[in-house]
Image (cartoon, rainbow, N blue to C red; front, side, top):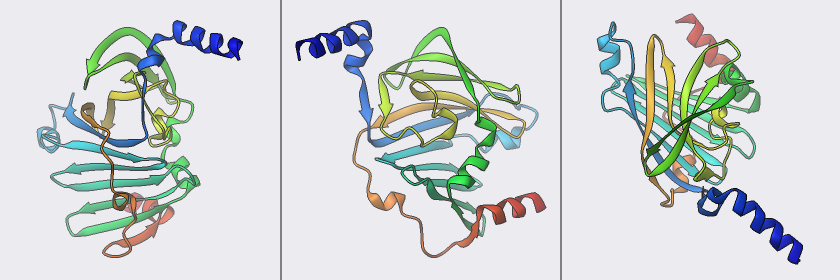
Length: 220
């Protein structure tokens, strides 16, 4: 027993950050979205003004809301069995796309094999110390992410691209068409999230499979 206690004491002495690490098993993270590039497309860039992305977590359940003046995309996922749905509302079109394990893998295939390389740069975001890392994808492209080790999520699979990141991403880049978009966490709460947030609607949407949605997308 004494040897076990000494072992844990040694681990915490080597990694003092573990002593203050918090686990986010339930709560909300709000990301502010800003356009980094794309001045040649001002109208497309303007649609991101004031736009936020909100992540809700509750155990294995996650909900990501992306709301813009043009419409919304809501991603619901249960990491326990890798099922869920993507809800899209644009104009009069309301789609509910059912997702399973293989569908998630296909949707996120570009992130397979992603490599994160830590950099010697840190900054404070939403009250947490974050370290910079460069993410490199298998197609040769890359993006920057700032992550914190001070806060970790119980659900590691809420976002496929960051499942192997050694911390919680609080700022990162993404590409939307020819635009480079930056997501920066502005608010983190540990308040309870109602279970209704994670329920898939049973009416009001045109339902389809992931394969049907890809064919619809490719035909437009």
